[in-house]
Length: 257
Image (cartoon, rainbow, N blue to C red; front, side, top):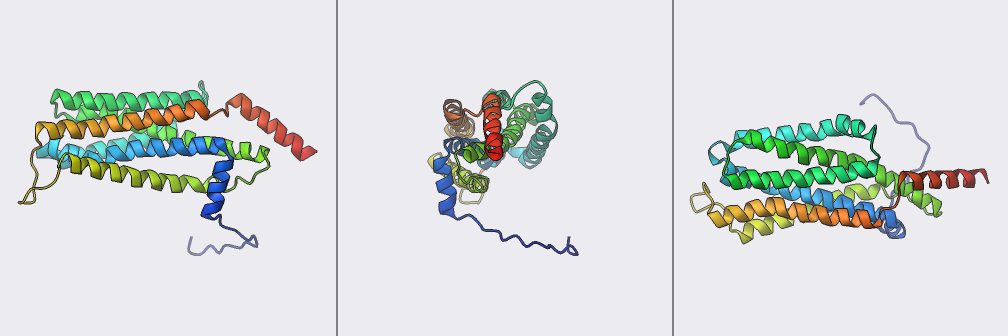
């Protein structure tokens, strides 16, 4: 990479924040996808921000580091493998909109299972790998589908004679927004349930109310956020395979005219 010299005579013009929001407001389908991106990532990041407290102070305080590492490692692997293997497999007999719905169902089921395992009093980390697979595999597939949906909104915007080249630049922005929102929510949860280190700098056990609050916020809040995101998508997203075929034909006809 160091020895490769880029030779380009193309002048690149970066989109301003104003350009991004203007394109977003003019494209209702892009707006729907962006909201879905924010909801999906906010749900995931809320769980990730609270997960370390769950392992350290609730699920397995004595062996929390090993269990937390195992959970995160397997979760990351599940996410990558779902993007590489599971999504292409499902795509052979399902369209992207059906996979989108299936992914939401998998994530919701995963959160419910985490809540059930934690409520049972079990400290078997291997049981948690089941919901880890459901949630992270779902998130992996959703990230792939969201990128596809964004590409579809660009075609949709082109049909309306609008410059949608800045739509993809919104993806990074909204993911950062979701990260910030989830960090804020996690901070509020920790403050409300007074989950913090004591005077000696340690916190070895949570009271029953604190445990219930942490478990509920780590699972139920993401469930609510995901449901909101799915409702927005289901109500507003209309770029089905048939609609995209119509758009492609219209764009081809415009180019030939």
